[in-house]
Image (cartoon, one colour):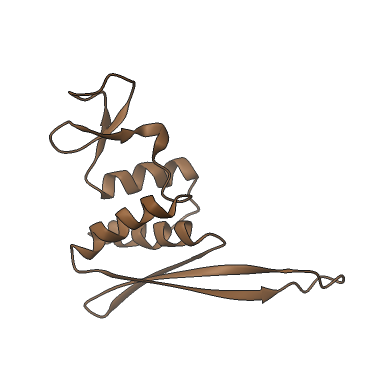
Length: 124
């Protein structure tokens, strides 16, 4: 998978959720992500699962209902710079179903989960 922008992740994860963009039947304030009944789920500008753990768990729940298991791990990497200050935490997201695995790594737990989930979505 090529590097994705945040906007691409927003759109692709919304589509994984079964949503599409539009004005909707019950909306009065701009463009929304709509469900299959054209009812607004949330304003498009408010869906950022790559940066919001509450939203990314909605993606995890959607996958779980289809039989996918999500696992998240982290590791601390020591900074190898001459000053030896600080380090970085990397998050590894793993998604498994029927002994097949998808994985992604990022500095953000939500982004790692999104990137792994989008790999699953590519194969569905």
